[in-house]
Image (cartoon, rainbow, N blue to C red; front, side):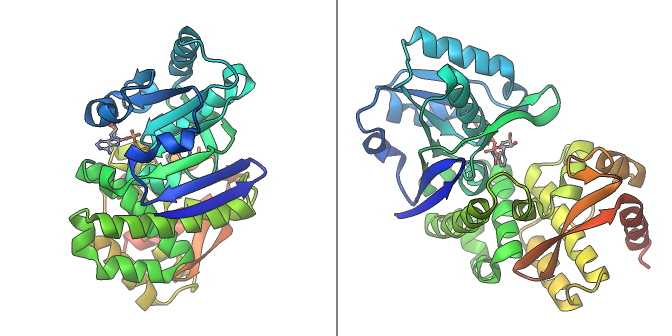
Length: 345
Ligand SMILES: NC(=O)c1ccc[n+]([C@@H]2O[C@H](COP(=O)([O-])OP(=O)(O)OC[C@H]3O[C@@H](n4cnc5c(N)ncnc54)[C@H](O)[C@@H]3O)[C@@H](O)[C@H]2O)c1
């Protein structure tokens, strides 16, 4: 087990990688605790928290809403919770985002922690103190910055995850390698088969390295005023294809990373060999380089991107494998580049 501290002006958090769900009780320190979870986790892991009152929510992005927060708060009130109650979210990114938000507004804020159960939530959603809910179809429009007191990352829980959810998290791990740590990418390449078999030792290592990278970035820039934006590597084109084609998050982010590698090469920031290394690494895990997307749909979507201002977009590029930076690019320039790339010129 490893312990990583994430201390920022949004609060202090300790992330335990390689810890077990069965150990969560010791972190509660005897406080009255209510568990928030979803119906799948309740079915698969409910035996671990059957001694605690629990609020079980549904699954899917539609559940990440203010209506669910209201439901959670009404259940907390029914359970006699007060300012000293501890809230434990057990689940993936939807459960952790909504638990963090509900805990931050219930009685103006009570302490909370997570047992993070998906690869994406262990390496991304649970780290860094962003909590929130969607406003209709607009993602994460309502939220707060506030860190969980602790996060437990149990590699065994990842073995019950569907392959598609697993690949969503893996794309974020690979992203961390591209932006900050080329040796993480070498580890991933060298352990391809074990990774695809969901070997718990390699999962534990990938989670540890990823959490360290995200924690470093978040500690330097907790509220995303600069550096933290590099965590959006692959997400500009990625979010757009996810919205347009409804493809799983991991495949969408991988496609976005491939576009970003190609753009970094076109702008002479990385060599052709580095570009090909990155693309082949992603393709080796089954991520696709092409989706049949109408260019007009793609750029319609990009023009509504949250990272856009004055027709320019904060685009995350690489100047070498393992080092990212942000460049403002005009959307019309990006469109020209995209058309040239698609026509093979
Ligand atoms: N706060 C942040 O910084 C941040 C960062 C990235 C993503 N997010 C958010 O995270 C959310 C996505 O999170 P996610 O990918 O974890 O999805 P999720 O929470 O929807 O979980 C995916 C599915 O897997 C199931 N599941 C969870 N753990 C399981 C396990 N161990 N075994 C079997 N099934 C399991 C869930 O019930 C669900 O059906 C999005 O809403 C996104 O906006 C937040």
